[in-house]
Image (cartoon, rainbow over all chains, first blue to last red; front, top):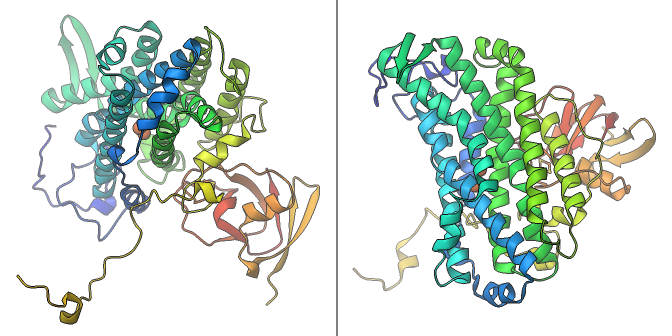
Length: 376
Length: 87
Ligand code: FES
Ligand SMILES: [Fe+2]
Ligand SMILES: [Fe+2]
């Protein structure tokens, strides 16, 4: 079933499933099957920000004064985050747009991915300020073994879905041999791959950033690297929206509010989905170990970080219907919350800087007198 | 109609809430010193999810997080009856 950029069939998007139905033709939002995606788009756009607007120049001085082990922690986290956003800035588009079937979700995916590219650009903004030539840092991302391990787990479910979708869209269902390997392509298999992929992305958005976030905010607690911390706060806020979108997709499937076959698949692959999540948690803990191998930093150590990962993981797993697997029920790093709160609510006066662009409505009623002696 | 409701937390603490004051359930729990979970405080992260085992709540902001049956998001709701929750 080949993809068309403008499906000429008359389709009713209100009757389409989220994925693997008819491809979207008219980008219309006056009627919506799952209106939450339109709300997510609005919210995400209201969060629009540009990295260049955050002044990171003072971080350079702070950075010079960090110990070697703290520098390792800081730079390694930036590398890992660069990897995550490199993947997220393209993969939802490449993997999901060819198979999405409702306009509000299609546009959400594009909006989501676009914001990941803002995140990527912000890492360059941070690194350019710290190093005259940041090439070495970027180049290490594809060499560094610790990052490689994670890259593989993150990209494999996407790659698998993309490959099978390509086979299906060029050859249709059947048994196809590519480079000497046999592949069975049918709708059930495709949907299973989609299910695993969304679960892997969900785990990524849910826990994979939080070890790095905690380190960033631990520096900020000591009044260090504050430019960086401002940027990471904006990123963390965006990531919450991304997470909520994958949780929505998974729950809509589980509760049979979308494709009934996806409900069956969600039950069938429950254990595998759980394993994907547990692996992500394990990898985050290993990451904490790697970060602190040369020594820890004030206010944070490996054990606290691992407890925090467990605390976050419990919360995220319950959100998609798993029992909380860890005993860590209280927040071991309570100060994290003040960095994760959305700025629509003021926590403390010093946290009150305006980071949202939606400060007012555009006034559509402009009278001639408002323009005064303005002349063309 | 009275807007004063009872909120029973984890089967132990019993709080009395005047819903017309506009305090969210999250704020109510905080004021009682119960240290509820939260991140965004704005309905879009799901961190404040608690189990709602009895009664009803009203959402004062439209939440973006999926609310599974039997759950509620404390940061954007107020009690609409006597309720029982587990956190
Ligand atoms: S604190 Fe984020 S949804 Fe309630
Ligand atoms: Fe991101
Ligand atoms: Fe993201």
